[in-house]
Image: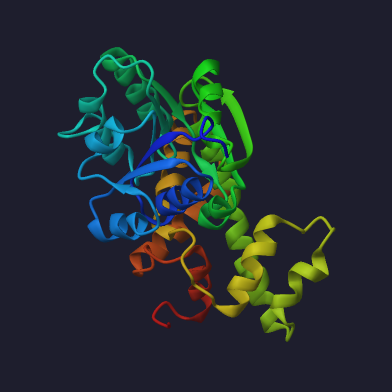
Length: 299
């Protein structure tokens, strides 16, 4: 990457996803400013070359692009409009662009985007992702973007370092709506793979061989290839949290109920995820869904 193409980027929220995003941007030669309420997470990225900021305001003030990677609409709103938030660093600043890579509900996204634009002139791109931390580290995320055509195009200066597939889906909120579609398909797929793995095991089949055996057929999928071996090995290394999936499934249900759309599979996987969270598995990796067959209390 040339100095001319290197961007000044703030990453607000450096949990599993945000830290992977920040690491990838550093590897690509961008100048990265990071902020999180967890000082240890910030320090770990500072050791890899990021600039540590004490507040979201400070990180944004030193950057032309601001990425938020946070757990809920309420947290995104505090990061933008709260005390020492992004807005405090961007009075009437139409040049700075906010890229929200969190997964939040579409109505909140539209409201936040409009308020940010009215108060500061800043653009807002909702850019939820699929692929998790492993794909972020490789620059192979799938991102579905919402916002004006100009803002979505401008975000490419950063997103091209993170994405293999970056699609403008429509106006503000369209990216988050597409993410709900993605999450519904993923949640159903995760449960299907978990059941398939357990069925294979019950029949005396080495479940780790399922991806190879089914490759190229109609049952083949990225979820099977990635999570089949993980579930067979009971490998619960963090790549994404069960409670985050539940949050997205509840957003799917809220939207579908408002439209009176019958979605029986969405209801079933939502209830399963509520059971996992109730059993104390909310913070665990998606592969820990296998504990529905093994006993929730086992390691």
